[in-house]
Image 1: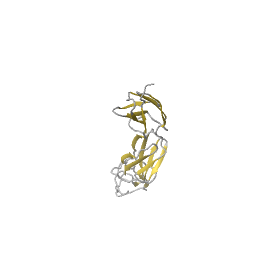
Image 2: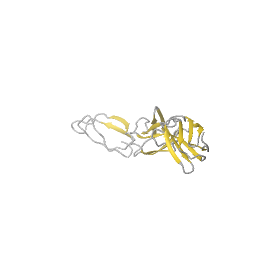
Image 3: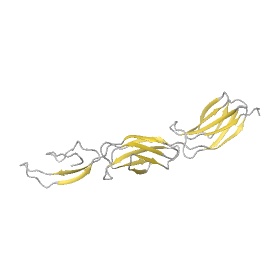
Amino acid sequence: MGDKTNGNSTTTNTSYNITGLTAGVSYTLNITAVAADNSTDGESVVTSKYTKPDVILNLTADDITTSSVFLNWIKPNGQSSHYRVEYEDKNVSAENTSININDLIPGAQYTFKVFAVAADNVTEGRANQISLYTKPGVISNLKITEITTSSVFLTWDEPVGNRSFFKIQWMGDKTNGNSTTTNTSYNITGPTAGVSYTLNITAVAADNSTDGESVVTSKYTSMFSN
């Protein structure tokens, strides 16, 4: 007997598979031995068990920052009481179909697993999961240590957390360019003498697509050679 699903059957074996139940519901199971006259019943054994909740639907990640992510999903078919979110060695509980995860490392990869939990607080469904990178941190202490008629040498400090490489972009009068480096310095060559250039440095995570916040500065190249 369970929520909207009741039934009975017989078997000559000492095992039986009950099908057609609703996910995440408590069922009371009653097993009775019957004599050969098909009417004399023995004493019943009664137990109660929850079926596993179904898997959650449409797990998505929004508002990804350097240290947080907002997870959204749709409740599973059947019933469930709450949700358990697992990542790394951490577990957090969510009563509703969303949760904001904080205190993450910038530029790091995380896999979030979300389980629906039945009302017994023990029986869990199969996980739905999503993997993502947090945004890398912003670089600091950007310096231009040498400017000539045809080059600009940049240095900066590592951002907090993890990163894979840096994107460098420069934009000036008729001369634009971009490049990447795994170092914390870069020499831009080929700009026009005496022109103002806007320089943009961004840390990128190991997925090669998640960018951190950029640092932007403007400088003129030298009019005269050294």
